[in-house]
Image 1 (cartoon, rainbow, N blue to C red):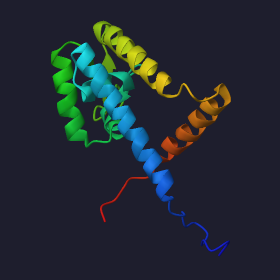
Image 2: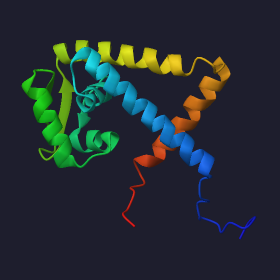
Image 3: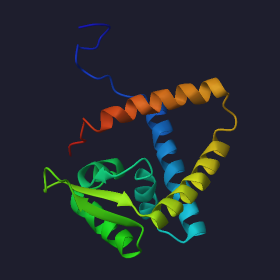
Length: 155
């Protein structure tokens, strides 16, 4: 036991940290909703498209990044695919793996959506110095890296 915390036990977040993270989540959701209204695209579909900007993802990985079940992600991608913004293909070595990729039109739309979302989130960070922005990015990235390994279990 070290400093009142057992080894391998994660100390609970403070109320302030929890509130800050919830506020950040709300800021992101409301930004996507606002930009979605502006661009005529549902917020969840925009989030999925933005997740694909860096390249194809498996349906499982996309679902995890969007915080939804694989079946919900499949339904979401079905709606986006009908609009011609994404395509799906199976992995050549493991046919069970389904990849989702942006089409040319999807890439153009995702780039535009990402640009507008980034602009709005940058404005929200206007009071931070370049160093503070860099630290914030590092900390959030480090935290999100754990999300893919740790799944929240119902209480």
